[in-house]
Length: 133
Image 1: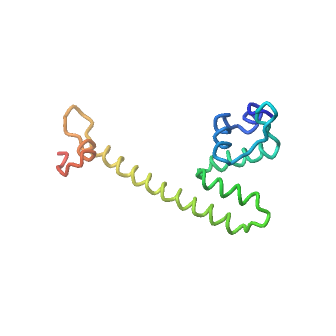
Image 2: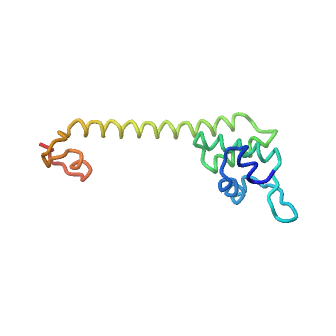
Image 3: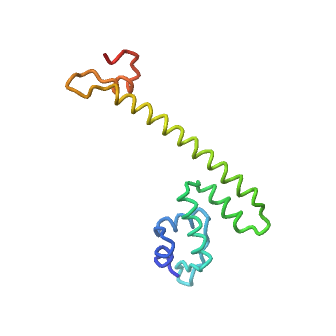
């Protein structure tokens, strides 16, 4: 398969596939004229990487996951530990987003949204300790 074929079948842009090759996540064969020649195993790796990235795993996490996937002597505990660490990061991001939502919601509630210049949103963003009053 050429890069266009594998891009269509994997759902990844050709640019992403080239990037994954540049950083060593995949290593397609090359034909005599230098064109990439992808095999089914490359397509499978790309689908694996696409799914892992869709779940928010970093490139380095993907590298480790791919290494574990290709290691027949791997321990599932190693995979679980990596996934658990990622889930912990996701939960922290969710907590941060919920705190941001609560703060912004409170600021919006406090803002009269009328023609007066006083605005608690702008005061909060500026770090002012004065009341919006």
